[in-house]
Length: 68
Image (cartoon, rainbow, N blue to C red; front, side, top):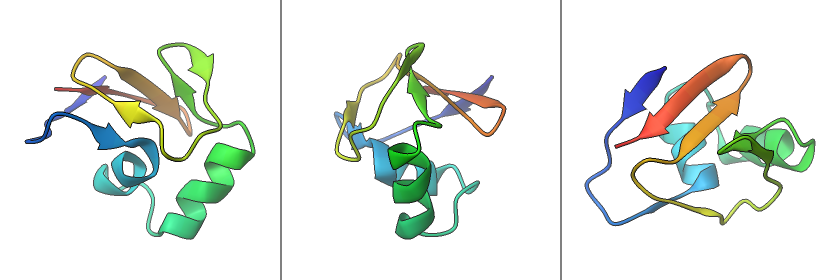
């Protein structure tokens, strides 16, 4: 699991996906989210604006990340 450190209280899901460096554009992030390919804390998440806080776990494209 890869840790992604943020310097703010939270980060939105679509921004987080781009921030990991695994997704190149907001359009790609939107497509993955709407296709149900993103899990947040084990649950499929379809809201681009979902706020992620330290401790949240995100899974996509066979990778796992945790917000720190």
